[in-house]
Image 1: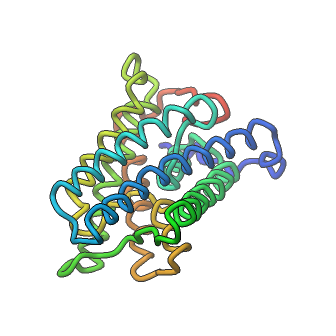
Image 2: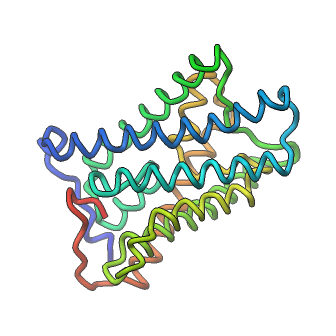
Length: 252
């Protein structure tokens, strides 16, 4: 059971040079991802004079997030594991692949990276607000919660299959591509309903900068629940009790 491998970590872990470097890697990866992802939405609004989202706009958002996440995961993979998502970090913790204290350090870095990216976008665009996540007309919080749970399950399941599983072999080489593609595909599926966050930090940055918190809890509860389910399912069924070595710095 992966639950037996859960570890809190030591108080001095957060001050270790490798932990600090890993947190900085998460900060910069998140900044890169959010700046490109949110920026693409702002560019669409500028080009269309804030018109309603169109199918082509949804495709553009999907591609922007898929490409940006592919890069963000790739550049952080060798330093922090390339989580770029508090839900992924939580899933790694549930599976015993990262300690609680290091996970909290990652969370802080990820949230700060998202906020800084949104602030930079607001400054660079002359005061335009980053688009906060919200529910579409006719979509209830429970509809959105299910969307976020299922989409994040798919994301974290993909992370486990391509980056965590000790049997991944050559599949690990394409992990960043697979992770970017599942996020892009999920945006095509859920973007028109609740924005398809799958990432509490991605929702947090715009909420802070625009100070809009309506239904914000959905974008935390859904991804964390989906990540936990994916970690437990994959680790119990496909990894099981086999010994698996985490990547350097206790990540994946």
